[in-house]
Structure formats: structure tokens, C-alpha cells
Image 1 (cartoon, rainbow, N blue to C red):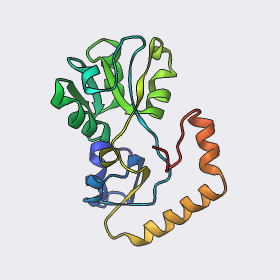
Image 2 (cartoon, rainbow, N blue to C red):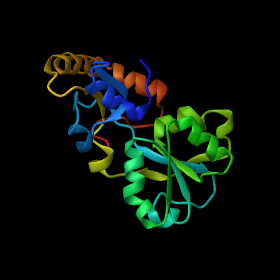
Image 3 (tube, rainbow, N blue to C red):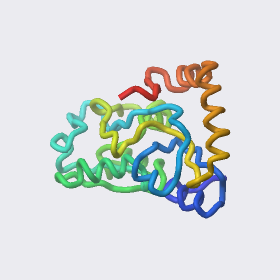
Image 4 (cartoon, one colour):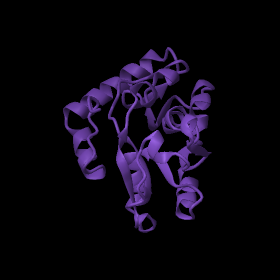
Amino acid sequence: METSFDALIPGLTAKKFDAINSAMNITEQRRKSIDFTQPIYRIPSQLVGKSGDGMAATAEGLKGKTIGVLQGSIQETYAKEHWEKHGVTVVSYKDQNMAWGDLLNGRIDASLVMSAAGQAGFLSKPQGKGFGFIGKPVSDDTILGSGIGFGLRKGDDATKKQLDAAIDKVRADGTIKSLAEKYLPGIDVSVSAQ
């Protein structure tokens, strides 16, 4: 079942589905509403913008700039907390493709995304020519979380137990590592990565 990112947690709690599998980072804020499996993998968040634009992924380096983020995402929370308070305009989008469109037509200066989504969804495509990652990944474990897991309804211990066992299996047999190497080359997805 497809639904917009910011509608996932309400849909889960309303029993429209039993688990969220949407690259959702495990954060303390989200733990107030839902439970999670153990972390499966972790993908850093990075800024995507025009190559050689001279921006830095810091409040000072983005002052006066406009940054696009996915509505309801941890990148939105990060940008509002760390950048918006310091003179950076943060624009939220219901769909990341809308942000990419605005980046291409110059309405925003950059977009903060999970690095894998930035690479696969934009930089690896023809329209990504002339764009790249700006600076190093941003960090704030309180906002950005401890890794990506399946979101579960509070107290759904049976589903958690089944999914945690499946995650243990695919980690032990090398499936997670081989998929990461194939689809996310150069990105360290280990849960212990910072």
C-alpha cells in the first residue's frame, strides 16, 4: 500500500497496515507514537546542490539560502532545528521529486536527503548532471536516529519478534551487506556507523 511519508504513522496506528517499510529512521520522537524493529541499516543524510556552488552543510554556510526537505522527515526536523533558526529558509515538500524539480529550476538552492535517495533519485540520473553532495553528512543522533527499521504499532510484540528474527537472518547470511554493495556502493550502511 502506497501512502505519503507523513501519513505513514497515522496509517499504522489506524491499522490500515501492520508495518512501515519506508526507510524510516528510528528516532526518539517517533518512538513516542510507534515501536520499531531493531535497526537494519543506516544511511547518512547529506545536502545535494550545484557542484562548486561554495555552500557548506552548516548554518553559516547556508545563511540566506533556501533548502528543500521532505515533509514529515527527519531531514525536515534537522533543517528546522539546526538551520532555519539561523537565517536559512526551509521549504517542505510532500514528494521529493517536487523538491528535485525546484532545485533544477532554481527555486531552492539545495535539498537535504538520505544520501542513497539523493544518489539514486537524482544524482545518478541525467538531470543530476552538474549537481553533487555538499560537504560531509550531517549528524545529530537525537534527530536523525539510530538507523532504519520497520515501524510497528505500539505493543505489537508478535510482529516485532518475527521481523527481528528475519533481520537477524539476513544480516547473518550476508544479504544486507551484499544488497548494500550492489545498490548503495560507497555508502557505509552498518548500524554502528556514525
